[in-house]
Image 1: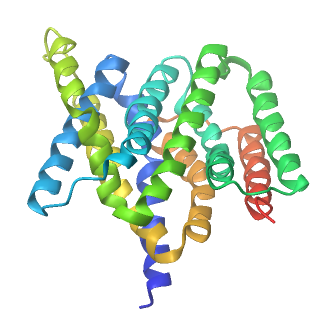
Image 2: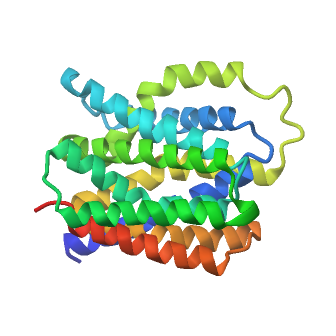
Length: 288
């Protein structure tokens, strides 16, 4: 099996794992406070990441890369998990997952800025159209729409795209799984302290489903998913394998319907398809 094929397989597995993040978060915030959930998942994944770095004796990053690692940590370890957890208190998982459709575009935008590329005019057209479709859906989706939840999801996608772009640059030098492990370790001391300070008074009333949601977002969403995802990007190419992320909204919608029993409207599916088309067009015309 060629490296390219292995890259697509690993990228697909990473995308599948990430597709379950929002439904799992939705389940977990039923009993866990969103802030504590964010801290707990980062603490658990950080401890495992630290163990992996020690076991494999991974050299420390050079000092000049400290700021990019901090950006990755802020984007994918703190910002995205916290904002999505807060958003899911106001909107459904099926509604929130539509915003993930624009994540490849946002990642591409930060990639363009990070690499200093000159995008074609068509790129901005696809970007604006995709944003307009998402905004229109949020306004027309009735009771599912919530200004606070929608704004939080937009913020979550923005910081996640920034974290992905910086992580992609770092992975060229350090390797994918090392990047996410170091990002987790950077935040680990603070996360552990706040995990102790903000822990629930009692865990007796926490349902089993909420515990499973915490386990999923800690092990799979924060760590294992990145292992497959970054390996796929490294072996199959960042631009090519990154297109698999366009499938994430559809798998997320399917999981939300299957696990949470949430309704998936025709308008939501149509919007997802149109946004995916716009993101794909933007990615194809991102640079000259």
